[in-house]
Image 1 (cartoon, one colour):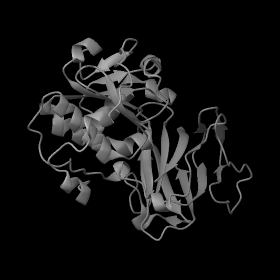
Image 2 (cartoon, one colour; image 1 turned 90 degrees about the vertical axis):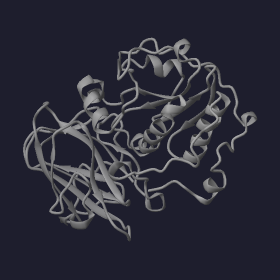
Image 3 (spheres, helix red, strand yellow; image 1 turned 180 degrees about the vertical axis):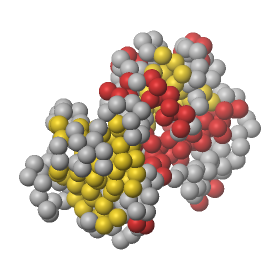
Length: 331
């Protein structure tokens, strides 16, 4: 997918964002309190002076972050030699995202090659007074935060801010045009026009629209369990093989944050759509017969269906016990 639009082509010489259009939102806070740094020795605001910096708060299972990631990855590569420094602050949502091996594994898999601040205690999150995954903070070469973006979207504006800050720092030979983006699988932009199902947690602390009676027909955006499950505050955990989760949804994509209860275990599953194998509607983590396996604690793409999008019943049956399911998201 390319982000090159007619408007971008008209402004391909570079900097459409006037300096006066960017405010001053305070100085870059300290990264003190970080649990650990990955891909870098610890960095400081003073040591970053003279560099344009983009700080992104993320957590690796967040579907909203996953869909912004191809843009940040492209910016980091395109402007690295111009002096741009990208820093990712990994502040975990789920307990398993505190696990350093999980973070390292998923960062490698997704090509997060820039410095990562592991922020397990939320110290850096609080220093920025941040409240969102994902969140972007754009810092000029003098160490001032000049712009921010919370959530998905506004990518053209964000890249133009980067280009403006680099120009202000004295970079006068920026490549023409904006970055070309390749986004597939979980990273592809949501089908917003057909997205009619919300993020839905399974744990008792945040669960909504749960149908304990496991009816044969579910109302839209309601879900149910069948089998031997333990409902925990943060997740549902399957005790024996054969457990199912059903969800009546309206969206192109179905994702589920899940993982094996014990590291190193594999839990086989099959996915059904309206009672049949997913076929051409299977997601990246499922084959056309609807089969897949849970091996890591992460976000799995289970359905990506072609149009037309209608209300449909999703079911996942686990052929082995020992799986934990945390949250559904849609795209």
